[in-house]
Image (cartoon, rainbow, N blue to C red; front, side):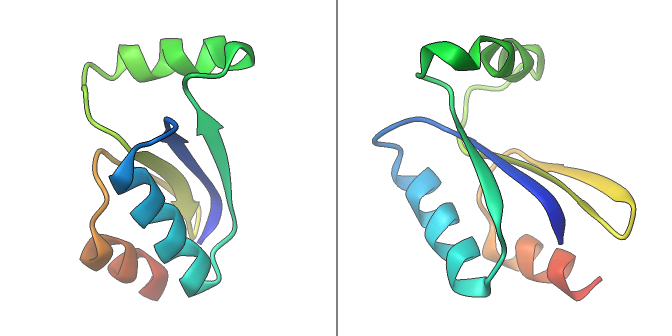
Length: 82
């Protein structure tokens, strides 16, 4: 898995679970905290998705982009296998 981003906020329990899971799987990622001032464009992107859950995980596997609107170990495991 390459180019993984996690859109999160401070104190989000599911965000922490997702980050811990990716770390345990050895998958590097960029965390984008939506509460930080400098992430204005990321907040606009998140709002454009029309959802209200976190984390949002985006990335690329074998040239195909994906977006997950929730943390799901099974989906991540299936992406890793590709």
